[in-house]
Image 1 (cartoon, rainbow, N blue to C red):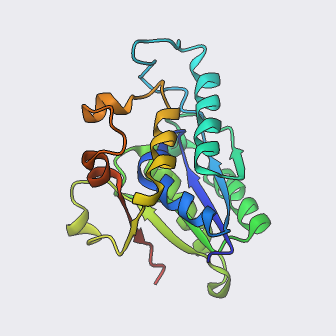
Image 2 (cartoon, rainbow, N blue to C red):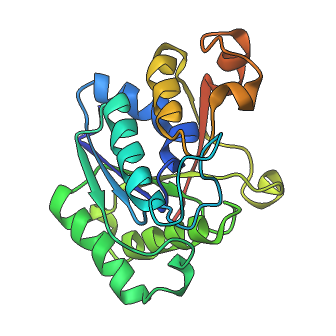
Length: 218
């Protein structure tokens, strides 16, 4: 069992598809989870299906959706760090790293989840992962938590190889589905999968395994 898990991701909903089952599994086993979400995703293009948000209301809506997702997963400690969506790569690195380091020093995680820098498609994803890697890399080796990364780029196997951690989360698909459904301004699961059966074989096959890459500091 992990002592404490820290999740560092830039947007509400980043936790839902690739990580929520794993977190629910750890939480069931007694691990405390802190989730540091850098932005409120206020620059997101989706406004609901059919639209129910506006550019003005979207930040508050996404904040509530994030809180609902965390309740579905069982996350006990949600931190919203207040950075601006789609600008993480342009933020003052010292400030960004200091915010992340402060949380690391406070909660002393044994494991951190983030995005793999350079292999996570969105600039905010890559910049967030890079900040975590920089920050952890400055720690003495004996104090570094393990870092597991999400990655989505098309050139994964050529760049970083196959995922080295595969987690079966089929038992936790109810929590995962509720986490995804919480972000209703951004997507609807039935529209993504053409099904309303959230325990279908399609759901099991697509969402039943979560994949991570261990970041090596050597």
